[in-house]
Length: 372
Image 1 (cartoon, rainbow, N blue to C red):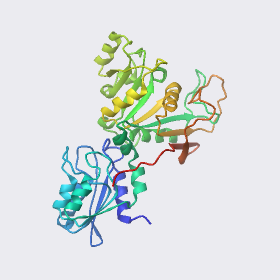
Image 2: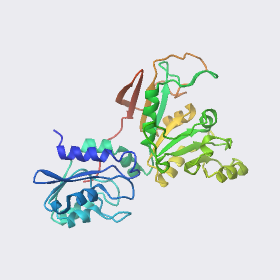
Image 3: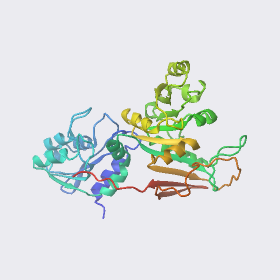
């Protein structure tokens, strides 16, 4: 049975899903003599951590209380103070945590400091749920690269496009709204040059029920080895141009790069593969250095296939429309793969967005083992 206090801590942590990246989602519940006296969750990077918020609410009732938190409290000074130091100062009696923080700045050191101060520490309550909640953070902090997801909408016969000149929208309004919530949950969205030119997308979160702070809009990433993108694209002509990155090569025209940069866009020169495509590993490493913890790849077919072939995807989200296209020129999301891919995937979630179905696939790989 799930511990009710840790369950509440996980529920509180979830509230930071759209705002605290690249930091982890953390919730904290403080219990004194069977009564909850403090609650907190980490709202945004640079703002107080969950433990500090909960301690502030609990006040003097934190003395002798038990702490339930889904991730090891931090023990270092950054933009905020040490949560471990605050817990020790508050004279709590016990800390229950789900998993250890893999961040090298913490990674068991917080536990050691708590125990050295005479505070009991219990590890492992709701560990699976805590690992699933912060899978993006755990991947990012251990691999120093963003957690990568691919997303596409397709027909029942596996096509993502229709012949030129016909309506392009395959899925329903419900599926479209769901895809914008998915966008809101990631730090960046990536497309290739063909998609940028053909669709002229905005790559922003647009929800009827939400007026999103521009600072919380995801970064927009374009891969364009030739650097031949038109200057009039939506991505280059909006208040969010400064949150747009174009990865190109040294062979792209300097005059083109200067014009794009004058519009507020950042241009990064990247190496290319033998096939003449942008080096995806370079891109992911560079995004990691820019503190971009998650990436949603939206296409097109060539880009999706490249990420898949190089085993760079951690999840795939497919919106399946009950339609058939059947046209020989219509594209599939993945192409030129060997018979059956050696990569193993399993369905993590199936969601009905009438009349469509949303399938979330996760890669079957070794379970993350965090230090204790």
